[in-house]
Length: 110
Image (cartoon, rainbow, N blue to C red; front, side, top):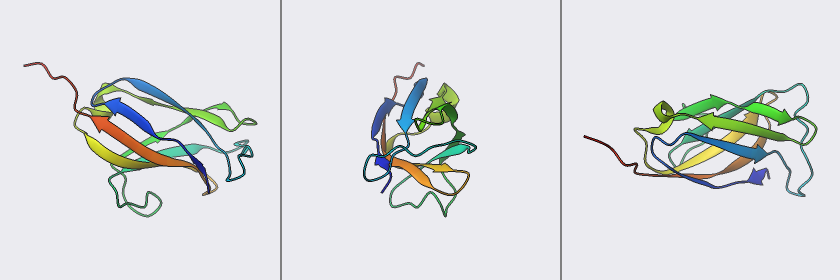
């Protein structure tokens, strides 16, 4: 089972999430030579098989430590709110992080 990381944010918030690829024994999953795609969708949902609500390419911070970041801008989430599931999947098809993403309604002007 991959590392479970849950996140909470506001709709339209600019945010960078740091994630860590680990296995069920908390051993580091090396990301050397791999890319990571972060995918988000409404439950029940399997991000590996269906079209995601949101998909971003992660930036590897330390391949040997299994760490990477995903940066979100206003346009990524300003129309989203509610509960979502997320997965980070390597280019080799390995799920290294999974969890829930809760997006709270943002403050809107006008």
